[in-house]
Amino acid sequence: MPGDTTARPCPGPVPVHPRAFTGRASAVRARLHRRLARARAHPVAYALVLALAAGLLVLAGPGAGGAGAVSVCQGRPTRTVSFATGELRLYRTRHYACALVLAKRPGAPRPMRVTLQPRGGRAAVVGGRWGRQAGPVTVHALNRCVRASATVSGRSVSTGWILC
Image 1 (cartoon, rainbow, N blue to C red):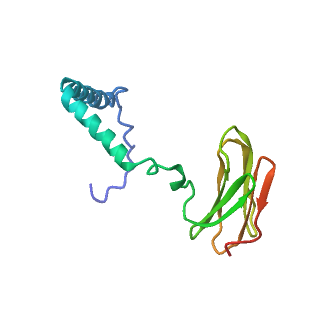
Image 2 (spheres, helix red, strand yellow):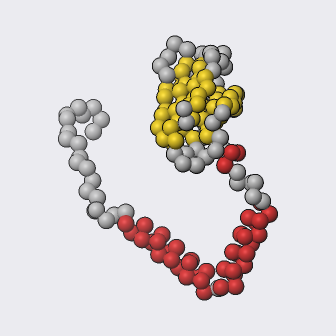
Image 3 (cartoon, rainbow, N blue to C red):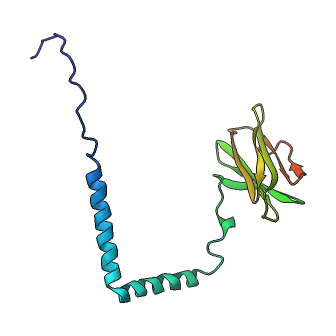
């Protein structure tokens, strides 16, 4: 009623059956099984699709899926510092800086460490035993210089204040 200010209790939670959402999942699963059965029923079409997929992989070439093309850091690459056993890579966005270290010869796990510190801030460190890379390490570096260091198998490199 308009103007009625008497307090009324709120209704409780609506009861939900514990298996209320399993019906949809089982329906999707059943539909998937039907589609797979249909694909197996037409072996010529199935073989044609496999041949087409294999052909596309051959046309793409071995270098199309290289691991070096994709970085785990956001932003654009700004600096790469090589040293005897690895390579320190630095990336920068407007607000953040990111660093990682890659071993020159990936293989057995070895001690690796990467450090990134914004000026006036605390250093972010990742260390341990890895075979290929250590990091990424990300710090907030809006309008700040950063310094980075990396170690792979006892050999290290460090930068001064950069990316100012």
